[in-house]
Image (cartoon, rainbow, N blue to C red; front, side, top):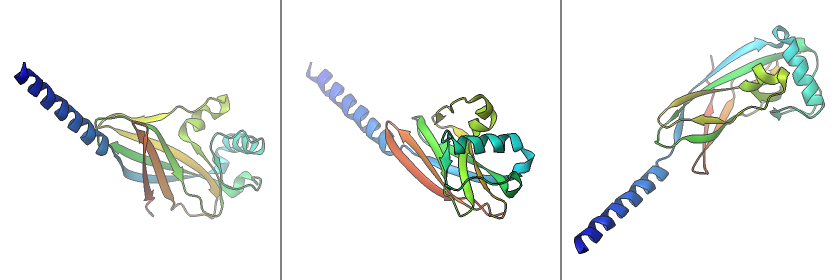
Length: 172
């Protein structure tokens, strides 16, 4: 009976060490940040919907400026595509991308809102599967004269513990 207890103790210690290693090595990385600009006058329907939601405090996103939106011809949509890689055997849950605003930025909204905004659907939670990659996009409505280089913050959770990464978008 004693050898069985020793083997069981060794297995428990090995399992505990494996769990500690898995927990402490949980991370993801930002592989790339790409930006694509689109003149807001190409999507006046989306611009008007955003303007209406911002005026009524119903925007699902982040409002950077309290001043009301002007004419559609003064703005551009800057879409940031962030490629993330999960480096662990645990899924990263509730992954969120936030762009740091500069003067001229009006608001930010997620990709799911681009296609679903007209139907008022709530965006779903982003996850990165174990050892997988995921591309998450966010769009910033900004004045036309503003440049596209921004700092991008990514936050995700492993077992309820936050992991936070910041990266600058590359100048092109």
